[in-house]
Image 1 (cartoon, helix red, strand yellow):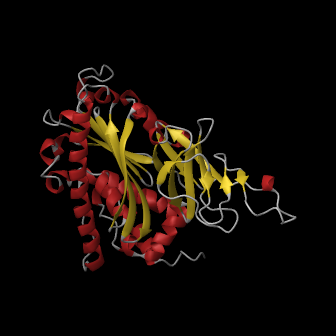
Image 2: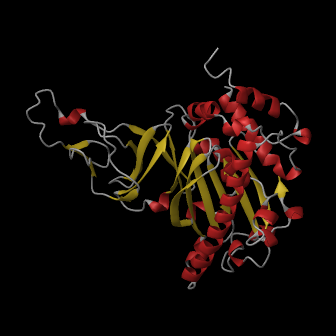
Image 3: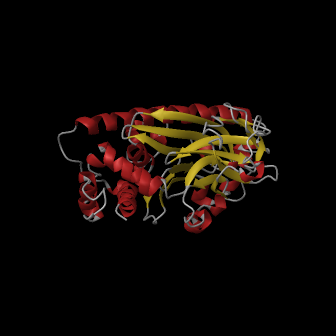
Length: 377
């Protein structure tokens, strides 16, 4: 018996997904509120799966970097001298100081504690004051590396050396959205936020449009007809659904110069959930995304970014288009923050069980199945 076998939340989730979708309920509250269950998620999901660090276009030049943390490992993701992407340990090999914070541009990685420095490939560049140590050899020092892959413009990182390649895991998704050319969309903004909710509450909110007419009644709600939302079965690594946008939301439509898309594809938005933590809204005109990492049952770090499709970027009015997009998505995000934080507050004080799922919440049911398949392995 492992230390996790007696977690009540795990038993609750097993019972929850044992029911077929036509009778299914939302995940039980214990799955969102239990610190023990979150520890299980960190060990068996976040320490084993691919996580998104953002868009490769954000690291355009050698020396561009960003930082992240996965399962307790501080990580630097950077563009090296040869133009490749690397993920390196963000811990100095001398006295274990964190090396870099946030994102930016560097010529070399320099420790803020004793000025040990490292090249962009992780090799030790310099170590002042070490000449008197007879055992010290600069060539023996290199920052440990983690696996880092680019997939359709996304930077994916894992601390699991045995994880299958991203392109292999997401080949079906790549084929599904190939005609959109997502790899050519350029990130125009990236922010790091912290929300006071459980990461799964935010994930579930993104993967269903059932809430859109109500939660987003001041923004995108009037442009979405629930009768036109297409919910289809997902896979072991992702789920998605589609919404057809109205002519009122011009940025969600294909630009007149877009010759790749035809018919309803010119107004179809894909709402994509890549397990466990990457959530993409992909429209013919723009994209935006959230990349999640849990800190506590009621706290989640959120990378929030997005940008325009190439045709809108090349439009003479691109600055106006971007300003309109950023204003819209900021409002949508603020609405989602309010909704999901209220859900977690309710979960902490609930006295009743969770309710039955709508047919529009099939992705949520599949997400619960995914969670169980990983934590119960």
